[in-house]
Length: 310
Image (cartoon, rainbow, N blue to C red; front, side, top):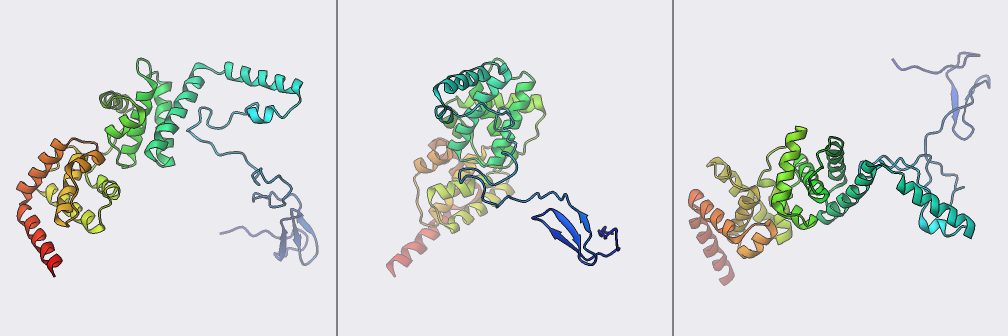
């Protein structure tokens, strides 16, 4: 049962809430029931500069910052140089000492979070994945698992683990390209991290790659749907188990593109998927033989030729 505020003087519930004065007044007897209301809304009084945000709180806490965004900095360089010469030297010296007194963990986090933002921006990853990767890196750093490994490889492995956790398809080759770290090194670090931290990640599915690959290759929605049907048939005959999800997804798209007369070269598909042409050819042959798609492809080609003649 909800609590209804009443006037302590006359018992009336006919009250008026005045947000400007911060008061609650009884309309029957005029008694001021409360005179210190807290306004949690946005301040729209217009008394601030246009450059300032009209709010009563600071920036939100972010795992992507080494201090979670809670540290008060001395000031920006551009703002410091606007002061008088004596004050400028003083605040520049204070800013330098603020950076010197930080601990080794803070210095490591500052560099690591900057690297994380660069790689995530290159891969166009959503903010939730960046926060998850930053959280994993904090755990790794606090447990001393970074020693003996390059910071770049650990950051790339954390981002890869975060992508796997949120079912966002990104290959190790893409991580290697974005971070300038070898693919094998990222893979080794990734397996080490999930083993030490006990992270459970779902096995990536070839279906997760279809949408992104088809978008980059500029294939039609029908081709994308046909590729998903090919993958469903491949799963029924257990053709997807034990094979790389990116490779089988790329081969399914290649087959679907042939069926819809949207021919793409094996080189084009392989480059998008981050695999070799040999892998495309092998997976393509397996799909054609096991699913008996050769007749369907020829039939589609004949139908398309007939339509063109008409």
